[in-house]
Length: 326
Ligand code: SD4
Image 1: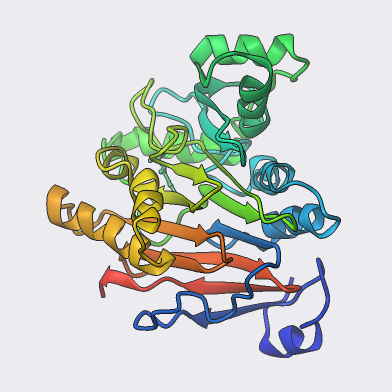
Image 2: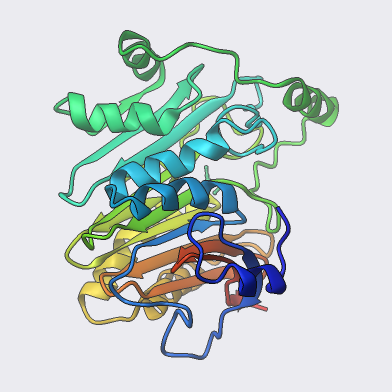
């Protein structure tokens, strides 16, 4: 797919085949989304995810549910072997296991999650099944895999040859530094607003490369990696999960919007809270996305380099988020 302004202009009124442009958010603007139109469906996701957004947009455009949109959207990178932070092709932990974390939340406050799950490509769909078919919110490890198998999911090897080679190379030094690097992530958090104005969200990841076996990040934790309150808005996070977990960034951002913050102000304060309280190292990154009921969005990160993909009114934009540290 080519990203060009000309394509954007040409396809400006088209739907799922939207052109994609890269441009800059105005960090100073009180209005967090220069492209926002209240009342129309919206899909927003962390990092460069135009294909995932297109899958989600296809759902909301035929007046489908935001919940179906976010599930369909994040399944795209889950199945992509070249996306090394999510699902199939995800980098393994330091023992060579690809372990997945995912969550999903609907417009009624229902939530489902799987953590530390192996061998099932579409973690988000297992999370949705936990939400819809069990009285629980979260299943973990072998129990999550077992539940998925019992519900017809195929068990497969998620460690691709490329990921195995990269892991074997890492093993040569086995320098234990499970840092989510600043520029190159693909973990996907996605929020969608459907034609009925309902908001849902999902988040899915293989977590940090070469993490300790058993480590769980922020992504599957409701309120940390993602949170939705359909009366107010939604938020999702990416980056160093330990920082997000310690401040429940997504819940915090939604609560700030409840108290009157714009989505941009909420995303900024959630990141600033991390910067102020946790004193993160120079090489750590956190990016936060927010949306409110009006279809306005916000984005902010600790470091420069966080971008996100937003689709609305038939166009898709890849935007650079403003950052705390320039
Ligand atoms: C984690 N937040 O497991 C995830 C990593 C991430 O882009 O977002 N990477 O900590």
